[in-house]
Length: 467
Image (cartoon, rainbow, N blue to C red):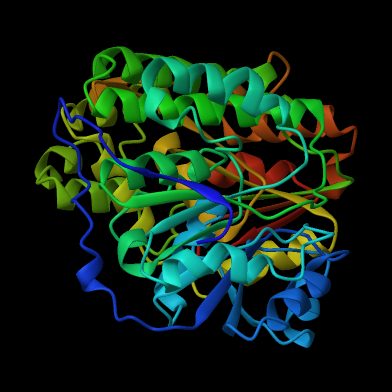
């Protein structure tokens, strides 16, 4: 076995979790490796990473899963010999999970698309213990000192909640090899928490886990503001796993996550995360990006159709009154039901291509809807948009309370004269933030509640209009 440390897991599960123990007998015993590279705008390095993977005699396929890159990354990866696919959901975790479903070998190896200075035998070092049947999950460690998020966030929390993992020198590292059968049973977070989440889940699944030294490598450093976001997501993942294992009260972890979600929706925070740009494109969600209306489909799936009909399209009510009455209908519905519905509803044909094409043309692209943010964030990730604005359903212990916080960005002191809460106000906040004029805005909508936004944008598209 290559240089490394092996720990057989001794996790005591104090609460039920949705991870079944992994049985190595389920594997097929193949001796080749599938390399999976999740990418987003990695044009300077992706060709060299793909070429590096192909130089290993153990590699029979290289799969690049693209998150809507606009710098030519997919073409460069394809030219280097990779199979290139578009991810089903914006976010590294979604791309990694897509790769599991696409790979044909039992042994999978994840590489980041921005790596440089890789040891020539890295693939063999990391994959060897899995191919030999000695372990099920391998984390790579390298000579670069641990990053700030590892030292200041991950390690302290692991010492408290998962002391059995403190031996790992680089628990957040993105170079991972694992058996495909094991990965299929694990939960992929769709943010920076994915790598530590997989490590913890592999331990919980009683898989055999090792950390292997791969020598020196070079990796792009992240700006400080990105590190803050990364630290929050890593901390949230560790606390989530601790709560699920009974090492932390789940109600407390759930409350922390809910508070953080509402803080991100506050106007200053929401606008602060939108990257600078000279042109803006705003899309309605229902009937424009999604085929159908989210609340109608959610009501159908949760047996609330008759209750919804009473308030649907009731324009004798104010937008605020209608939104609050509809939100109350869904009290008690699990958050997972909201998320699942947003994941499986079909997209309009060409929606992904339109959003990515606009981003390539220099637009900042957003989803603006009076539906729920739990849905809009998933939908915007599915089409690779930059941001979304929506109303916030409140959740308690993983279930909707029926209480609603209206999107702060839909209120503007000098905005729409006809409506206090209006999508046109979101547009006004954005053009002020970006420092652009209305003539630089493209708006796409289909209904009465889009009318003000469409009127005020420089270029408007009434897409299959309903009114």
